[in-house]
Length: 133
Image (cartoon, rainbow, N blue to C red; front, side, top):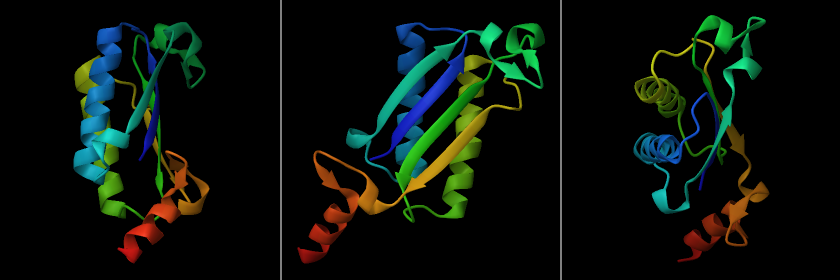
């Protein structure tokens, strides 16, 4: 049940957003083993003139960038899985957006199972219920 929050420089069409959300959902499912039906993605756009790397705007640098924050349950993925995800997301975003600034980030935040959930139940509750069956 991950939540992915991605900010992308430039662009803002529904087709762009759909392509980004679809690709991030696919990678999250395939590389981190998360269920598609509970993977949520929010796509936001930021003008190049308002995004700065090294004190220079992306507009001045003539570059594109993105920042992805994904929240997953603590301990559900290995270091290797997370590293593969970071690499694959960068490659996929570059394919979708064109050449990217190296300072395009993926941040994987791990949240304790008792600190979040969906449909009114925490992830820890789901884990315990699964053990009872």
